[in-house]
Image (cartoon, rainbow, N blue to C red; front, top):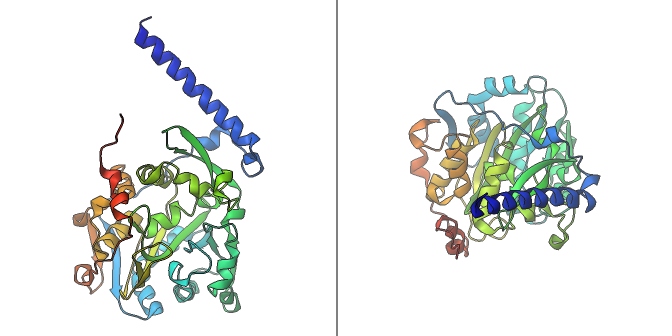
Length: 360
C-alpha cells in the first residue's frame, strides 16, 4: 500500500470515528430527549420539485392587505385545493424576535389569508413559528395573533416545542453535524403556506419565503447559544459562507407548498430585526418559492447572484430563478416597482461568501 493510500485509509477511518462520536455525543448531550435517530430518518428524501416548465408568480400593488392577498392567491386556488386534500393546513409566519412588530408577519396578512381559506378549508388551521428565542408564544401575544382565535378556527404552535427530525449540516471545519429540525416541516400530511414580508438580513443579504421556512426549521431549546442547544445558531457556526450552504442542505427537504410575500411594508438596513420600514406597497405569491424569492431580490434591487442559498438551490434544480422561465400573473409589472433597499451595515462581509476560500 502506498503512502497516499495509507493516508486515505486513515482519513476515512478518522471521519467514521468522528461521525460515530458525533452521534453518540449528540445523544449523550441531551439530544435524545427530542430526537430518536433511526437510520431511515437520516435518509430523508428531497422534497419533490415541479419540473414541468415555467413557474408562475402572481404580483400586485396597493395598501389593502386583504384585497392584495386575495389577488395573488386566487390564480392558484385550484392548485391549493388539490394540495390541501386530506392534509393539515399550517400557516408558517415569521418573527425573528417576539417584541419588534416590523420584523414579524403583519397580523392583517394572516387575517386576510384566514378569510380567503374560509370557503376552501373547513378544518382547524395551525399558525406556527419557531422564533430565535425559546418562547415563540410571546410573539403570538405581542403581535396580536391570538386575537384571531375570536373569529377563526385556529391553533397556535410554538415549533420550538416540536419533536426533532435529524438533518445533516456542516460546521466551520466542514465536519458533518446533525441538528434537529421540527418534524412538522417534514410531515407529508402537512400543507405549509409560508407568509412573510420582505427584509434585508445581517448574514445572507435578504430574507423572504425560503429563509422563513429553512431557518424556521432548526429547533431552539436554549437561549444560551453557547449551550449547543440553540440549533439555529449552529446553522451559522461556519459564518456566512457555510450558512448559505447549510440553508441549501436543509432546503432540499424543507420548502413551503405555497409562498406569500406581504411587501406592503418591507424592512431595509439592519434587518432582519433592527431595520427601518420601506413603504413598498407590493404583494406576490406562487408555488415555486425560488421563483417568488428571485422576484423579491429584483424588487429590492439586490443582484440575484449575491444571494448564495438561492443560487445553490437553483443549481440543484429545486426551482426556477431564471426570469425568462417565470411567468408574472397580474396587471402590474414588477420591474416598475423596484425600490433599491439599503442593505445591512455588514454587507461587505456578507458578500465574502463569493470569494475563493483562503486555505493556506
